[in-house]
Image (tube, rainbow, N blue to C red; front, side):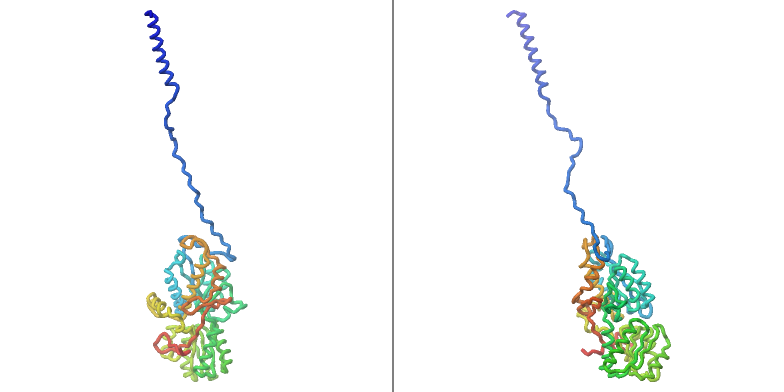
Length: 434
């Protein structure tokens, strides 16, 4: 091979190697991991919101939000001469709240109210104020039937459930009567029961043949003395006169002198404390009445009667619920709790009835409330609550097994007669004999 040819061939080989190297670099690009410019979006299953509460109740609902209390109000006499009646009932209702730990369905129980003064005027004021509060679920009250007559219509129209521990006037639960309103119930007895029992005691136990009556113009007293008079006549007795005084009257001489002319053996005055004390005191000093039996009713079951009447209270009778017939928890649990909380024996006679009334309301709220029943949002249907209350059957209360009638009588009535003794309270039960 010539020298020129060798050189030519060498150059050709070198050129081919260089072209192969360049061609290899162009045939396959290097692979690299993709660059992530944003974080990946993670998707989750949608969370279902709880269905919104909807009120379908015929007369509306009370809305109780999480953290809000269940509001139950009272309308009771808490001042003046008859304050022990209302304070005693309020105390009984408070013990029922305590027994629930102060809570209902995870909500605090708010229990407050108004003084109804044991009068129509007080009932009007308490009725107007409470009726304007839409948070109120139910009202425990009134203490006095005269206050109920004007307060209950307002609360009924507002859709409240109303349950009284001490209203006893006959017409409040009398079917078709203008004073019987939707949503009204009571755990107290009707005076149709109490008046008849008082007449039977006078006729059978005391052997009385002639009696006179006194009322104070209140719905309660006027109806009760009339039931007594009618029942006493049916037994064969004579009513010598039926008189009236005013609740704040202090001079009873005219009425008592008039009564003395008929020579009764017993005066039945189912009135309240202030006028009742004056009748006890002045009756003992009225010629012809010094030794005549005097008898009141549950409105005079109070330490204020014993203290105000002094020695003249000896031998005065009162008809009232028979506490010896209450359930075993009354002596074993309720009365010790009352003493521990309030530092005294019960002040009057309807504390256990108020305890039962509050427990009936709490039981029905638990039954009809809709929504979260562990402290969350819930609705309480107003008509549903009423329906539950009126359907109560054999409710195990302190005062007995309670069953409500269509017009609101729920009591398991047991009436006794008690006798006052000077300086002693409570008065002694003397009839019926156990």
